Amino acid sequence: MTEFVGRLRLGVNIDHVATVRNARGGAYPDPIRAAKLAEEAGADGITAHLREDRRHITDADIDGLMDALSVPLNFEMAATAEMQKIALRHKPHAVCIVPEKREERTTEGGLEVAREENSLAHFIAPLREAGCRVSIFIAAEQAQIEAAHRIGAQVIELHTGAYCDALAEDRLEDAAEELTRLRAMSRFAHDLGLEVHAGHGLTYQSVQPIAAFPEVMELNIGHFIIGEAVFRGLKPAIHEMRRLMDEARS
Ligand code: PXP
Image 1: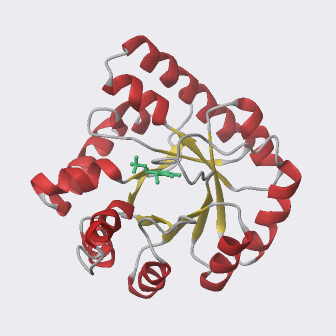
Image 2: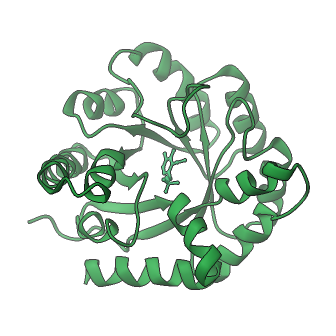
């Protein structure tokens, strides 16, 4: 059994505060205000994805987050020259490289690191040199983890979407199979020396088995928390997620 390798951090993704704002094109709800409230509620970091089409977070939001936050910003971005330039200008604490397709509703799969190894190695080198912690969002597959390690990423974030979908749809055998895969790959990545994060689709129902993996050091959670905030308020929604994570970890 792997020892716990540190306190499990919670990164709160505030993209969907911007989704609601952009539905009317005005100034509210303000994602920066949400990020500050998340900080006050105990978030260890704030995650924001500046998509190529700017459908939620905007360039001005990233400027505002960099100015306002006391906790680290995890800047999610596609591996494009435009995003690299923006990241190098801001030098956020962390960058998470994600695949991006214009037509998708959300980040559907992990990055194909194994197929793009050379170009990704060149892409992340200046980000690392600038002092950003580079994370790669991937499926729980050995070949992707090995490739992420070879290109010099410090962190991998495992895509938990398939597990969460299976659980939400009551496909319990599939959920158990996905969980087994995530469990094995967390250990594998940790043993290679990578820091392991996880996220996508996590809810109060699905978070605890993932939070219990001793090698996982950070969860990034957005859509469910922002949705739950409509009913409970943002701080109580975050407090409940934190409580469930701590309970699973103890
Ligand atoms: N981690 C990564 C890399 C993501 O792309 C996303 C979605 O933007 C999340 C975590 C958060 O997923 P969710 O909003 O479903 O909690």
